[in-house]
Image: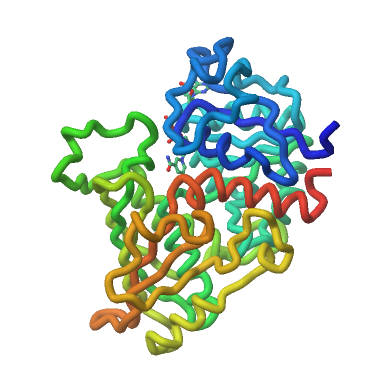
Length: 350
Ligand SMILES: NC(=O)c1ccc[n+]([C@@H]2O[C@H](COP(=O)([O-])OP(=O)(O)OC[C@H]3O[C@@H](n4cnc5c(N)ncnc54)[C@H](OP(=O)(O)O)[C@@H]3O)[C@@H](O)[C@H]2O)c1
């Protein structure tokens, strides 16, 4: 009999859902026992319900497992959610009301006052919001969110810089991978030889989520960080890995090598606690002149590190750099798993 914590995945048939299934296999603390998706998939075997797009095969023990509907009767206490945002909000609330701990990738609850938007290396104390969440909503469970897939790379670079030098203003341009749009996503004919300079709702997320993540917990609310971000978001013909070019104005002037040093030395609670999914280096700094590149660098730290390169002076603001992060690992499934590990380490899943 395993003494691991039983977990389920809501949206298990989707792009991020599959990544959860792949990453949770052999997890030292969690055992995936439940797979759930829409009524289109419920009742089918997992193999028949999903178009499997991962590089390693479906775990054998799950191929014949029956996919269930997303109803809060699953045999587990923790659920990871990668539901389409058109349904995630209500479904996740139903689960929290029924006592489940919900760790979600979806946007629906990220900016709610009483919901942590958690990056364990940056704002682990924001889990303190759960007391207020339970009191306000009267549910025994909880909803904890992780950031949008392009917010995460930016904020992992910005947070240590903000702590050391203060960030005033940021202009960021993203080049986002196709897998960020789910499966099947854009058609090849739309993308080949092309860039699409619009991703619905994305600029607003990149401009606001970092302010909450870098904010301060004051009683039962977060005081947002006092800086401004302007984002241009683009879809490019890359399979996985979101790249972003950022220019940053600082409160306290700093040279590129000082900024690079702060980033390279950044380490935090997940590293101290040796959480299984915590990368040794949350931010990897490269000094090669043409890196990071998605194909070669997205798997740094098993896809959990942000890779920063080309840290240099900016003639308009103070500093500019390029940051890359794996959108379905650190930007989605891996982020939610690390959040769950932090909660487990802090006795919140007992
Ligand atoms: N892709 C990324 O890089 C990324 C990164 C961060 C966050 N996210 C967010 O994560 C979520 C999932 O994204 P994705 O790319 O994995 O999308 P996806 O491939 O389209 O998968 C969506 C999942 O939602 C399920 N679903 C759809 N309608 C449903 C309903 N009415 N009831 C229950 N389940 C339903 C689907 O099940 P069926 O197969 O049965 O239809 C499928 O499992 C989205 O909210 C997205 O914004 C994605």
